[in-house]
Image (cartoon, rainbow over all chains, first blue to last red; front, side, top):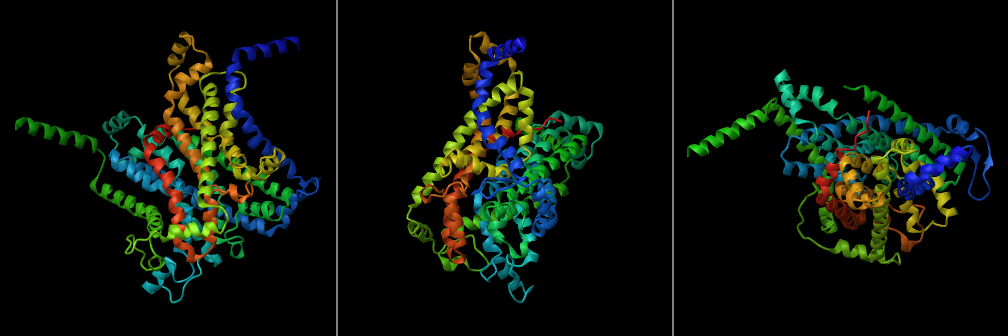
Length: 300
Length: 296
């Protein structure tokens, strides 16, 4: 015991400044990221409404959520649909566009990068899509379709359950060239040029072979980083749905796990239940990430 | 003459060498794809920007035009009038957004790089564990911890202050992760040299490491800027005089189609700043993202 204490003192003496440098971040991280996860997990086993103290309720929340809550099943279905369509598509788009841009000379390259990256840094600018898909004849999509004679009366794009999901997917794809895209551009610029020359000598004939045999394996770390960012953002679509399709959306067509969380957390104040939703989403995110990391590690 | 000719021939040869494995049809096809998606990407934004200067009658003309016949600043004036009915001047909302973004950005960069340095360049008890926690924390985001965050904030008496939105962003690990990866590539010899010159860890960090990491901290500036600039404050800030600009934007949009011009005006104000910041710092950001990779 005495010896252990001694070595702790020694560690502190030797690395004092390192721990001091880390401390400010560590405190904020613990208080606002780590502790909240623990609190979430604890509260998910209680019934809690902010007014009275949390009351332990065992697995009731989990059972209700999975067995009794039909809307949650819709939310899971929608979230998975959004994630499975926009996740891989966005990821592939990020890569393909980064790859195409990489062929351009520097000045056009930075202009095109800006053009593609702009939607994702423009905050709430996606509300323009509300005007494009507006239900009255002022909406550009309706006006165009009427003009071309494809439809004879206007479509209630954002009020009709059948259209909400496709529109969310389109807008999400519009927003998708984000930080992963930048990572890919950077990764591509750093692939060793000598590799391509060597490959040409070795008999690589076209750009597709170049891509598959050299580029992809060389930028595996960036691909993994991009995947992490993509999965997390595809699974946390909520504000977009609320802003475009309204809350609640027509027959829950735009309802995602996070809007469900918003419903119970910010509107009904059933915080125990809301935490259960958060915990499930948390594990879905981490689980998907771990699986994808394993898969990507096998690539190349 | 001959010299020029030789020069040109060598240029053409160099170009041919560079264009190895590239076919014209492939080039054309790919350019077309780029152009199509480019239009899809930029058109809605351009439309927003142009709409901000259109009178209401022109906004609803079909097909939508990217030119304005009678440019007007009325949308901006209307915006000011509408905001007046909120009892808080627009400048106050802008000030709030600036404060939230400024505070968050400074703290993210400062705390993020302070913590990144020891984790990137030294091994010590706990360093491996901390690095792993940081990596795993990238795999979810703040939305799943919002409720307990609210409870913790209210226990700390921080609800309805800038801190309630700022601190969770400062505590997210993306910035630290990027900074750490960037710092790993600083040569150890430089740190050794500083040590021989008698600089302690703190001084080395401040005088040697930080200047070398300029591209990385510019990237951190952009990232935290992005995540804070668009925040509406949500339930964390309820006083009208502390709400940020994005909140006004959501109010405008819920005002319906007749407010399209006004909401375009405020959107324009909102997007100009992040886009300008990105334009200025693009090359630094790309340089940083080159080191973003997750080691396999």
